[in-house]
Length: 261
Ligand code: NAD
Image (spheres, protein in one colour):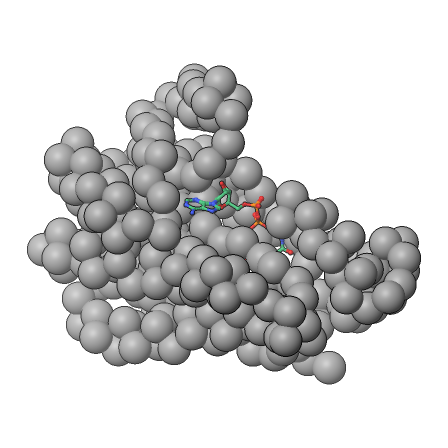
């Protein structure tokens, strides 16, 4: 398979799973638009490194996924340069862990905006050009939490269940346009997002950080192993290929058996 001639925009791709997906798509020949926060010099090093290693054009957009106007501008810029966003990966996400009575309202709003509404805004803006080309791939990084819940993650679980609904609806609306829309649902992947939630989970559950890793995180996954960024990226790459053109509206677990239990 080659994605040469295609352009992929991956939200939240300065780190973790998004960067892994952007890397896999670049390695397959796609031009890339990176997005996300972080140290400016580190982001530029990532951008330039990806372009040099894979011989593709790589741009960076600092658009804030809580801001619909930023999102519209990001898609417009990508379309002005590349014609269309052929592959749209809605991946940006954050987490906050607290019992619902202590859950800050502003965290609820922020998580719903980044983890759910941003995907509505990107799709809303990118779909017309995709439809015009008669080809497109929309991949939403959901989570095992699109299928099941865990305590103390009310906003995250609600947003990820919402992403599943968004995925299925847009899949139905685009099914005859050569566009597929799917959600990838990873179990625990060792990234900064998981690392940062360990102290709060320890506090919410009244246990040590070691116990969180052993008894909360890996206890959930029958394989007792973290899913890797590369495994998630390989699934995203597969969904971009012709062999996956009949896969649409799917909510696909990649979770070491977590949601089978
Ligand atoms: P991460 O913290 O490594 O990456 C998150 C990315 O989102 C970063 O690039 C960050 O800069 C970006 N981001 C955060 N707020 C943003 C904003 N307002 N605007 C633009 N970008 C923003 O985390 P990750 O684990 O790679 O998470 C990526 C996605 O995978 C998330 O949607 C997350 O919910 C999902 N996920 C992660 C796991 C896991 O175990 N790590 C499991 C299932 C699903």
